[in-house]
Length: 92
Image 1 (tube, helix red, strand yellow):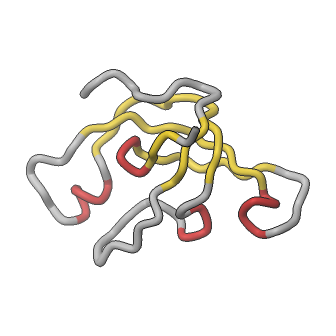
Image 2 (spheres, rainbow, N blue to C red):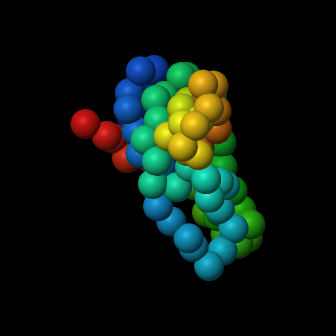
């Protein structure tokens, strides 16, 4: 595993994916911008494990905070989701 790419406070975009296999990216955050709260450590990528790949990637997992209003158009609260590094891209 490499060092985590994102630090707390980094703005990231969740991948806008809809793969034909298992993914842990909730549909409601796909393509949305959030902020990294913390890195939770490194864990096997569930997408690979669900497909029984013997060489499952191990990646950093981040808690990412999204504003509810950005996800659903209203709400004064935040939503946090744990996402693997390959699900995220840096947002400028």
